[in-house]
Each structure stands twice: as C-alpha cells, then as structure tokens.
Image 1 (cartoon, one colour):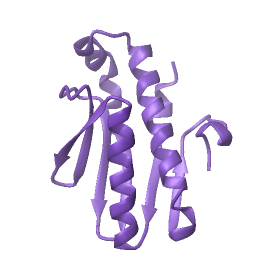
Image 2 (cartoon, one colour):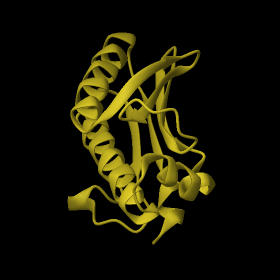
Image 3 (cartoon, helix red, strand yellow):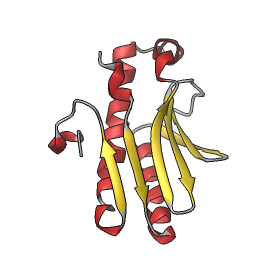
Length: 129
C-alpha cells in the first residue's frame, strides 16, 4: 500500500467566482462518493460517512486559492479501524476521492493556476499533472 501517495499537491489560484464554483462542485462530488462535507474554519473536512476520523480529506479556501490535502495520513490504521474496514480499503477510498478532486481541479485549469499532482499516478487516471 503506497501511503506516500496520500502526499498530494492539489491547489488552484483562481478568481473568487471560480473558487466558489470549484468548491460547489467539490462538495457535490465528494458527497456522492460518501465523504460528507463538514465546515471548518479554513474550509471543509470531507469525512467518510460523516464520521470524525483522523485521516480524511481537507479543503482550505482562501481569498484567491483552494488547496486539498489528506489530514492525518499516518493515522490511517486507526481511522480504518473506526470505520470497520481495512487500511487498504480506506486508502483506496481516499484515492478515489483525491482523483475526483483532481478531476474537478483540472476543469478550472484554463481559468487560473492549477497544480494537481498525485504521486505515482497515470495522468489519464488522475495522476501526475
């Protein structure tokens, strides 16, 4: 299992209107994958089935920028135990969410500066950009 793949680079510098559009799409798509959006001071925590586990996907929203990362990646074993699934299964679920986030970010590539990198991936499958 390549937990180092949880060290992603997903960020976008966009006009404020586009940031709102990106976040709206991100929330909708992540929730469709089972990651419920929970508001945080800096943006959102995308929690699996809404459960507050240490390892989850985060999105920070700043004036002019959005970034997505995995919080608590080193605690995936504990988080998966709370979810009653294997670390590998949770890792795969996180990767699905990250790949979906990458797909959304890439839709905004022509509107600003976008960096969407997932280590070891195939560009056509949500990998390096």
